[in-house]
Image 1 (cartoon, one colour):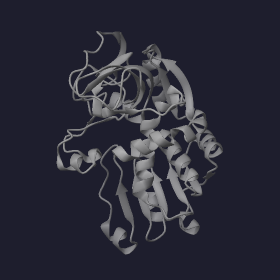
Image 2 (cartoon, one colour):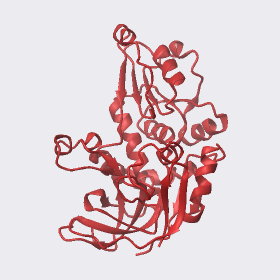
Image 3 (cartoon, one colour):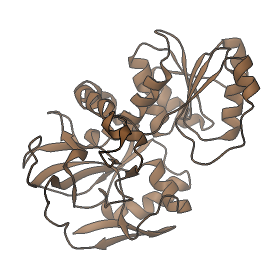
Length: 333
């Protein structure tokens, strides 16, 4: 079968490899129909972060059709379309037992610790798939995972009803946070240095584009930071109103320590947001039929597996105008 595998830093190859093994107990095999390129995929490729095995089939945002089930699998059946949970968890640590798999003691992600979805087929733990809703196109089912990340960030932020939510960064997660916040009744403010991208997200979500300067005059109390920029985070901490909260989603590297005195005296809350919970993903699945008609503006292009390495380079060069590139993986039941 055809697959896209990461061999090392900046070494991504389209290859013909054997089909995945048949599912063992509590596993499923999928024919992958659609997948999305994530910012963490690009970061992994560019920097070598999180490479724990190589070569590994990349990709953790994907959907497919169940082609085989192992012994003990009853929640999905052959021929059923499914949404994939990207988290590779142990299932037995205290965090997992409490439903907090996003902080599992041995957390990894599909596409890194096991083969992922940039392929025609993949075998996965059965706990990593849930039934997909009817009537939702595969390209939108492949966006369930980043939607769950966005939903988790908003839930962690816990913005008061009807209050402004500022979103810094109009990449995939920022755009989806803006969409969900707007649908949740929050006026949304966008901060993004790429004017074309900002206007595109504003048009799709009804948000308002603003600058970071003058935040204090606007009395913004709730923000979601998705850029990972130290300068942006510093500006948010300095400009957000007292007793405000910032949900951190886009932090990809360590930063200098933040002055705790400022946090105390201004009663600021910095909230870490890592991946999502099982409940977040199930709620996204339930809500996808209503969201599906709103997602196409965020899809920049649809490509084949053979196009993936070139798409990585174009994303990293800033040549992709929209938020999400969807891969048509070619899997069939």
